[in-house]
Image (cartoon, rainbow, N blue to C red; front, side):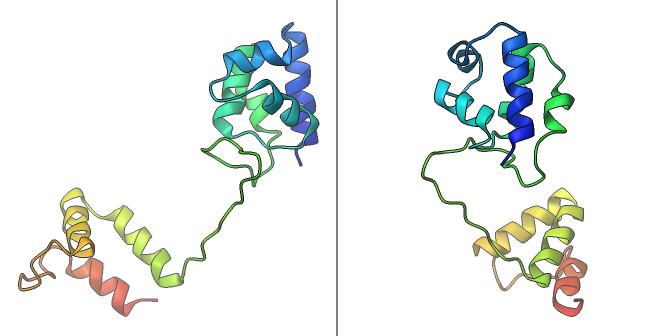
Length: 140
């Protein structure tokens, strides 16, 4: 795993004069054993944890973030014994997300109402969202 990142974390911590326990106390959601696992490269910290470590140790966030592997988790803290799940997304689902992100707020509200089943099917659902749904159905 992130041995390079682990070495940088250890160096930043020792240069700041902190023990693993002291650093863990300054990093929300991290324990002393988490800090040890990060330093040994046995676990990957999230970007937020890396930012908190950098802030606590007085080093730039960039110096630590650049050492993170590209597959590191973005938001949740690592948990011992947890299993990661992944989801395959079809081309149509990907296109749906792209179109949703590009839509205005009102269109997003209407689409969510349709997907939740709270919109009246007798309404002209293509009004305001015709291009959105048409793109999903007719484009690949």
